[in-house]
Amino acid sequence: MPLPSRSFVATIEDLRKIAEKRVPRMFYDYADSGSWTESTYRANEADLQKIRFRQRVARNMENRNIATTMAGIPTAMPVALAPTGLTGMQHADGEILAAQAAEAFGVPFTLSTMSICSIEDVAQNTTKPFWFQLYMLRDRDFIERLIERAKAANCSALMLTLDLQILGQRHKDLRNGLTAPPRLTLRNILNMAGKPAWCYHMLGTRRRGFGNIVGHAKGVADMASLSSWTAEQFDPRLNWGDVEWIKRRWGGKLILKGILDAEDARLAVDTGADALIVSNHGGRQLDGAMSSISMLPAIVDAVGGRMEVWMDSGIRSGQDILRAVALGARGTLIGRPFLYGLGAGGREGVTKALQILANELDVTMALCGHRDIHDIDRGILMPGTYPAP
Image (cartoon, rainbow, N blue to C red):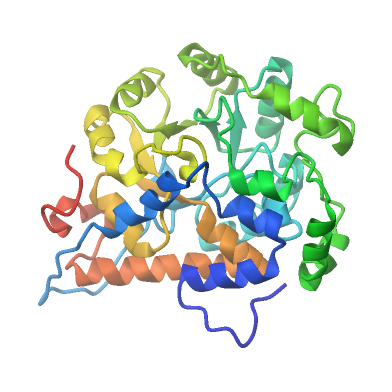
């Protein structure tokens, strides 16, 4: 499904508007919603916009560089694709297409445990290692098998999500009947019928279930048996000892996602993980929590350079990426921006999203008087417009 030929696409917002028209409501809302009143979801973006740049002039802006590394892995810019559930419902074979776009562009892709395409699907359709995201589930045997499958697929890092012990209530999902598996009400069926291109591509793929779970987890032989298993599996007992257990079982690079407090950041450092991600799950868990960007400086200060600090939640432009880097993030993760691109135009749409972000990052960095992303610090920001540690 290519991008519409007559649509002018210059921003992530342009991609969002196209995706909203092309993706069935229940799956679009799943990607583009927050929990409860969505106050944290909105704050993630709003707080980034409050941060102002210092415009500098009469500086040599030739030979600019936005490439860097994240956990030692080269990236074309300080960006990785975040793990997002149900990606393959934004577009048929969505995880494969997004992984291919990320690989071609030169940024890491992270596959969610709750993906439609399986670890093996993505590995068979890409040529470079990708990252795998893991939840702490009650079924430890299943977790061990997932880790072994990720090793067999040559995944280069494991990302452990810490902020989903209990699922935050998302009102749009409840109204839309988005369960696991999705509930096909008359309203949902009629809405899907109005998205012919989406339906056409979905009919052409065999990947419509949760590929990492169905046929792999005990007692989950088909989509009908998935709902009860999912409801029981997220483990509210998760603790730092479990993180240490995961690290030992994995043995490779470990990234901890979901840190939003300086004290938790210090505890994360003690685990010996390679990086942590300042994140509130895109505003999809604790509504009323602080925005990611507002907590980033304090967490960077608490970590004190002992591990890499990344940020996600709220990034919608290359300027937002630069704001995060200026406040100490080694890298960022994007979820909704690439999902909008995927829903708008498949692999081409994801590539377009990455191109938009890279161009905005490069131009903004230059207009701030810098040529290299590694030279960026708080000096490019106007004092008083950004949060202090």
